[in-house]
Image 1 (tube, rainbow, N blue to C red):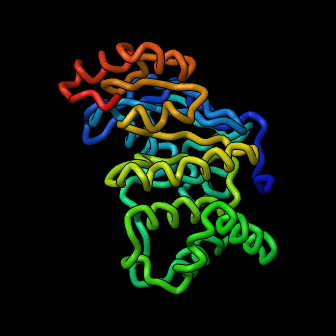
Image 2 (spheres, rainbow, N blue to C red):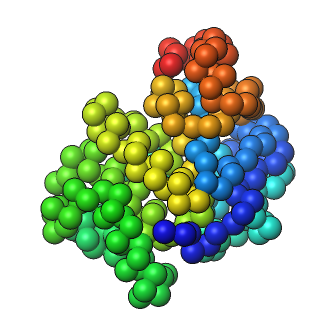
Length: 249
């Protein structure tokens, strides 16, 4: 399925600075999420990863810098305007409407789409996660953690984004549930979607990603090929040691 908001240049963040409650959180962050590839942003708790995601999504203001989807500047846009440019964000915490069925949760995500696009988005979600069809009428609150993560990713996919950002894919999930999600993300990237995995647990993201960034204390400490971090884990471990957090490599 070709993204309905296809952007050949992907998502670009340049020299981004963000403050919260008078304290500087991000300090000149720059990274790129190219179309058709999986990129990962790694770092310990408190590194600023979630602040970056909230800023991209339009939920926090920036004090400096640029966020662009293709040739469209995103800073200053409302969250729904950002979604309309083709940027979909899967926030940490698997936020679903618990009393609604799987089907209704997915239909809610298609509210801005024309009928044909909505149907194509739902079809693609079921291609990626066919097990959801058996849970179609089940309230979301009764699903397992892995099934709930499938639904929130499917919600993003049905909007037919050109860039998909996922915050803490593996948080709170059993390894077998995480492994089930990975082929779906590879298939999404193969459709031409740029995917950014924001993760604390490096082994999950590095098994998929082509490019990697490491954030520490609101700054990018490493940028390069994911294979380099796989081969030289000390580059990542140093960021975790500096933060006082146990390494998640």
